[in-house]
Image (cartoon, rainbow, N blue to C red):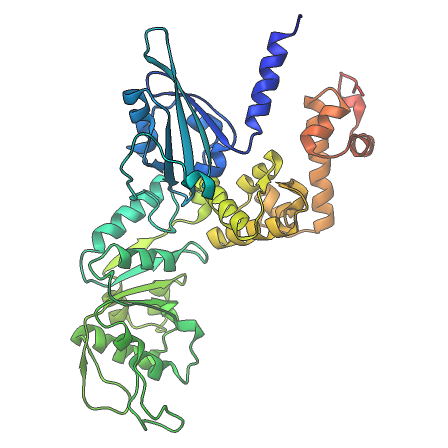
Length: 456
């Protein structure tokens, strides 16, 4: 029987690429020869980011999963079933099978990697591997970009000392997550972590909420009195978000608490000694507020001993793909789905300015998973904000949405017309029907400007 070997091989690879489970093949030098597309779901890495890399680049230099069964497979030359955990907080079960050559040496290792299932938990590997739960995920601060690595490195360093610090960054960058991380890696991790948004407290109640009050301190007060957030955080960490909202009338008292490390509740004359680590955050320009006398300069300098700037998501290109993978895993699990983004949708996600940063990314992915009717989230499933002119062209002008959508359609159709030779291929690439492709070509393309005629 004759057959086209090249066609069969390409078809086989295409089939493997679309298997839900991850398939990874290693050579005898701990190097990845092949991995299918499921790797993105597990590690936030694309095929080209993995193929050709050695094991230590994933487990030593920049930990993506732990523990690794590969060294034991080479050493014992036997199959191993191993529970693993990725830095995206995904639990996996990996089955590693060695392929031996004629001299009984390991030539290849083939791995089947799947999301953790209960029935596989009951299967025992003939070889035990000690688990290492420590991963470079830094809790919820998923990152691989160099600028975020520097933020985490500096945060670990200052976590060791009881000195106030200020976290700066745009809305949605994860300032509260970083504050909690600093607490968790400090020697105060077993003590309280109290977080409060200053903008959420009524101005009339802010003093009693921060400093607490004695019973009968004022009309309507709790009969037993109430502990303030400073006292609740005693021994631990107090995170004050939107610190710029602290009224000028209370800033002097606040400064006194920081300097003397004691607090006097409203209606009391007896001070309470404090041992609290202060972390503040803001997306305001406090320096400017000091200059215009809206924030005390001495309090600003007392709070800003250490300053940490979280970069916006648009400056963390390397983090975007792994964050998308992370939130896909989170919300697919939450809503019992198995959605993924199409290539065109991913292209739009990568070009979007993300003014709302990680919080906006999370919200959009959750929305897409809830509203799509299939397991593939198409470009057309993304919110209308992805097709606004300012987001498509990086222009600051705000224009008519309908015109922007038509301009985008025209540009994409013309580019596809120039590049591909058939309406079938154009329809496939743009993820539309062939009938719609023909209609849009007729509407937007001036065929006289192209030498090659379109083929059906």
